[in-house]
Picture 1: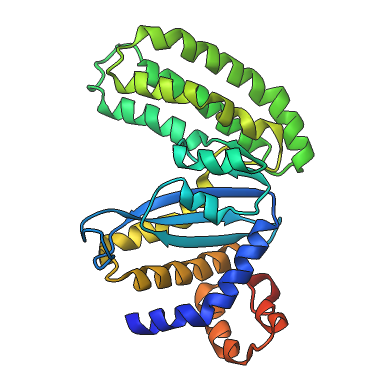
Picture 2: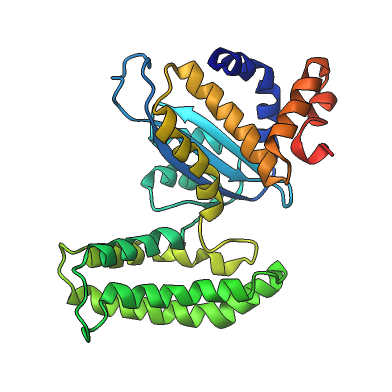
Length: 297
C-alpha cells in the first residue's frame, strides 16, 4: 500500500503544480510547519528532525492546502514555497519567515493563538491557587485576550469591510489597553518566569499581532493552517516516521489533496476516487484543471 501511494505521487504531480499556481494567485496565505522523522535521508541521522511545511490560502472561496517535505527549517524553504506571492502572510513568531517577507512584497501578520497559548502555559505551570488568592497576571492577560476573540465571534458574519470598521471601533481599544498592561507588568514579574516569557513574546510580536485589524478578510489567528496540519501530527503518533524521502514527499502530496478537498467542502474519499477514475485520461491542462476540487461536482 505504501508503494501504491509513492507511485501515485508522480500521477498526482500535475494537480499539485496547478494547485500551487492557483494558491499563489490569492493575496492571503497562512503557513505552519511540524517535525517529521525520515529514516533514510542521505547525510542525515535517522533520529534527526526533518520538516513538513504547510501553506494554506488562495483566491476567496477556493482555498488550497499544500504540504511540502524538506530536510530544512531554514529561511530558504519559505522563500522557495512563496516565490512569486504578493500579499499577506500569517504565521507564528518563527523567524524563518522573515527573509521571504523582506525580499518580496509580502506583509506579515501574527497569530493571537500562539500568544495566548504562552500565557496558558504559564497558568498551567503555576502552583494551584488557594481559596481567596488573587488571580495571576497570566490569568489577567488571558482574560484581556479573550475579549478580542469575543469580538471576532460577534462580527463573524459581517462583510470584510464591516469587519474592518468594527475591529477599529471595538478591538483597537482592547488592544491599546492590553499593550499598556503588558508594558507595565513586564517589570513586575521575574525574568525567568513563563509569564515574563509570554509578556515579552507578545510585545516583541505586537506589530504583527495587530495586523489583522487592518483588513476584514484576515483572521485573528493562524488556526486554519494549524487545523489543516493537525491530522498529519495526529497520524504521526501512529506511523511515527517515513522510511524514505520519496515516501515523505508522497505523503505530502496525498495530504495536500485530502485537506484541499475538505477545505472546499468535498468528501476526501469520494474526491480521490473521482480523481483516480479520470486522471489517466487527462492529457491536456484543461482536463487536469477539471479535476481540481472546485471544478468537481
